[in-house]
Length: 293
Image (cartoon, rainbow, N blue to C red):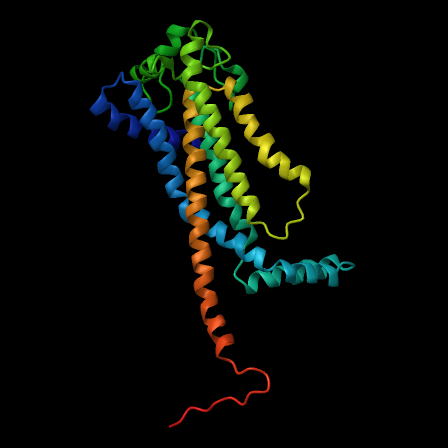
């Protein structure tokens, strides 16, 4: 049903793994780790311009909040006129509120695609509780001999045997069994890093929402409950998915810092002519000076 997502994600992952395997060897766990990391980098880099547009839209929406509230108050008894006035206000200022959803929807598709492709390396029923689209349950031998989208049987076997410092990339902390200590050494730091990055990303976003009417409960949920899910839910996720989360969250945090600094610089540049005009205006009661020819 979602093959239009699974195949492109699989193709990018395959290209990066092929490139790194050519240098490190096809059986290298590091080659798979780098392939997952660079898949995230590739897709997030492709989404940078939409994210920048989203950030500019949010900044413009923030500046228009006083006018939005004035329209809402003026036409509170006329919903149709209120919506018309708000749409005109956004149109006059070049704002498309729905455009800001593009990066979010794209990231959801990427996550679903990567999650399903990585999960589908093991179709023995181990991860049925993590299904994004059911796959037929196979025996271990059938699974090892069956291609996974663009990955052939050899690649499937390579992934299933790949590990990061002794922790299989396909293993979960909850189901590590005898490999619990090896998986915990890798999985726990990844879970904590993902949670910390999620917290600071949320904090940076909330701090820019000046005049926000967000309830304290929602702020606490965003700052603490969502990051906590990275720790609690991380125990059920394969190590390869945890690598995705850490890379994606780290990218988001760094990108957010860069974009906000750039927006602040643009705002300061736009405000300079207005400040200069105010400073050059004559004070009340003072006769303006004429330029001599």
